Image (cartoon, rainbow, N blue to C red; front, side, top):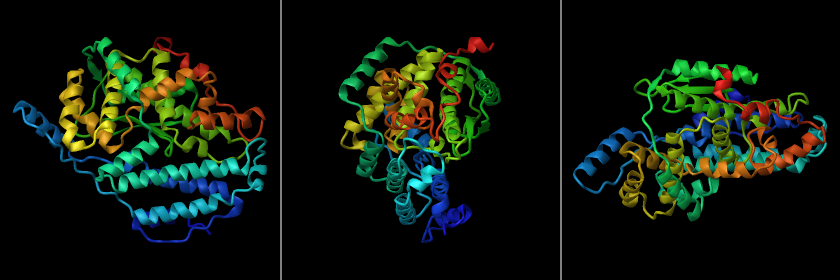
Length: 410
């Protein structure tokens, strides 16, 4: 039998080896529960963190004042689990995935999806989790960081990076008044959740950035880590629209199979959906008029930072020259270091704009709202919806999500 999820948590956290066997009758539910648990513990943003960014920023500023070269000495948090134990669990999950059969789909009333489809779905998720583990457990190794990042978040080409560089020259940043507290922004989130008709939690937490946690069915407003974070009106509206796009895709994914009894996997994770996720959130910013000049500038700067790092041969050696280029393009010292540090954690900050360009080309955006999916999986899963099988159309659709402005809610 499969250990209880509580027992599995203990196994992961203590690094003890065990044998996992899945109940064939409850196979999809047990696989989903195990994936849920693994995601809570192994997603890159939970396990990779540079702990001395503030100290390195001070050193960077001092070096620039004295016109000296700067090589960062970033210190990463220790990977908290046994890599070997996690990889063994993944292999046992893959063995369970191979057992998915017609009887499992028949019980939910599937019409188009096959056992092979679901095997591929779960195997793809497990493959991505394996990359997270391999990235985080040896993040100090530069070659490791580059290779696994590229597998998860393929880099844009030179032409795309060049376009962003040109766009930066056309954008004039303004000075924004940061007068809203995290509690006020939380109320904005709550009002938008109510308008959307969604049962979803909102919390404030002592984190640097806002985020959605589908595993907890909760969206988080950042309070700041060491001091209270304040928000401008422009940023508050943008982040409400952006983060609740993520929440809507999770919510729709949870609801997609609710009537048939199918698992909540589409709201938790599907293979390699991150680019579609961030690109769609940016698309919603544009559609709702909440994108503002400073943020648009930053998206382009993010892409250039990621691209430049991907083309470098030695992170430490080329750090200063790339940082100087970002500053010359209009970034601050703090933002230049922060973007390079964040990309050294996970080389992924190009996916916002590249994903946005993908969304502009997608004719049927309703498909993309059925869960945490990329276009390939959206197309495949939509056939099940059209056949009136075990999945239902998105509860919160394109019109409600994109045809909205904050003026409408005043």
